[in-house]
Length: 113
Length: 112
Image (cartoon, rainbow over all chains, first blue to last red; front, top):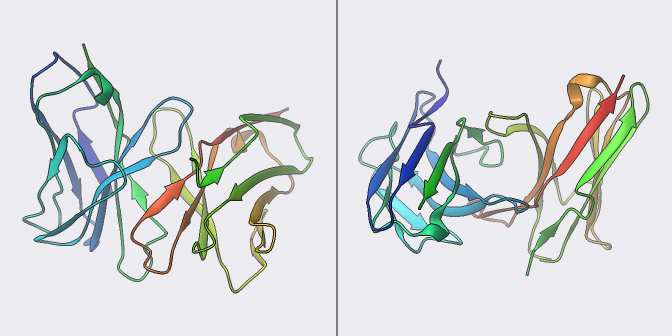
């Protein structure tokens, strides 16, 4: 089991560019999440999904989009990148009946300049 | 306004002694609490959880205590080991378990 994998590990974007952060899990988890973490702050939930075809906004969804066409994949799309989106992005997944026990990927460090 | 607070950014403890990490929350709707541990360049890993119907949960060297009236929880690590050196995040969620709020983390250093 690879667990939760994220690509890329690092990325530098120019203002206004777009990109997709990839997240894949091989544990057949129902729930998947995207978080961002800024220095000195806790993880903030961007979007989550309770299953294929179902997504919902978290605390900080503005500037992002997600889709969940399969159980395994949950990509996060940044449109028109802004410096405020410089952060570490973490993807996680969990079982339906153990939503608290989230398995996290290693993270993607994104810099927007 | 932070709903989950960890007021100590860092903590240093001698190997073999007890480590106590604290967490306070403001939202009385939270009823499930978790601790995660994070090493550098890795994602957080789940450590231990507690439901609001309990006041204590134990797993090996790790014990979490919950004081609902004070909206406070703590993680005790006994005995502390150098491998416990990491950032510890407290997290909370409500009845639906779909929206988690994380604290800013406490960096624990266990000195040999």
